[in-house]
Image 1 (tube, rainbow, N blue to C red):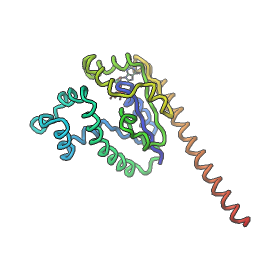
Image 2: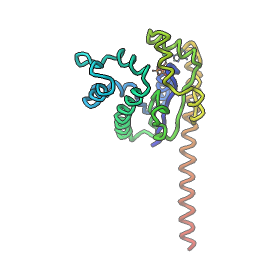
Image 3: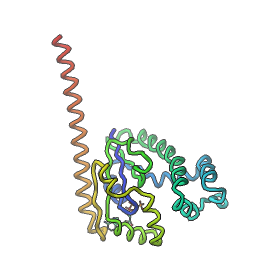
Image 4: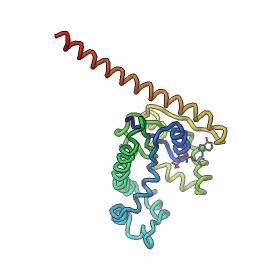
Length: 221
Ligand code: ATP
């Protein structure tokens, strides 16, 4: 099984792109959704309270606005929260891989693969990229959020160029109109999908050649 990490800054279009991979038969795991499920776990709730204070849960419900406000301004607490939630996500992703053992390729989508040092768990990393202005506009429209909010989120993410430099593949998603962009996104997804499949075949052929070489040597002796 090949494990692919799909990342990219906020609003770059990770979910849009992962949806296209899904349509190609790849099993996709969404870390954001998993992180929300984690919030229901007792040990995570206790961890949040320890790191961020008792008042992050109001009548049993997580106070996201409060959490965001703390994490925007406190990098140390953000790291502690990531350290708390990342093992949960890793464990759920491992289970997801077991449940999808019939798939040749599984993909994990996460905005913070590099930031949490999770990249080492993957055979390939794909970064979805778009200019900062485009991403800011998209997120403000999608979430009805303020420019300040989006800028705060951006400052906790690794610079775009650094992610690109550390990736095996990139998907450029700089369009303004989703309907217009889908075709070009699909072309990029198909090219990456093909490249990964070719690489898998090349690796299998190389392993087979090594085995044949060893067997021939043994027979010769
Ligand atoms: P986040 O990390 O913030 O969850 P994301 O990287 O998963 O974001 P998406 O949710 O896929 O990004 O896209 C962000 C928003 O931008 C969505 O509303 C999506 O519909 C829109 N969008 C994505 N790609 C394009 C595009 N090429 N043209 C116009 N809108 C787009």
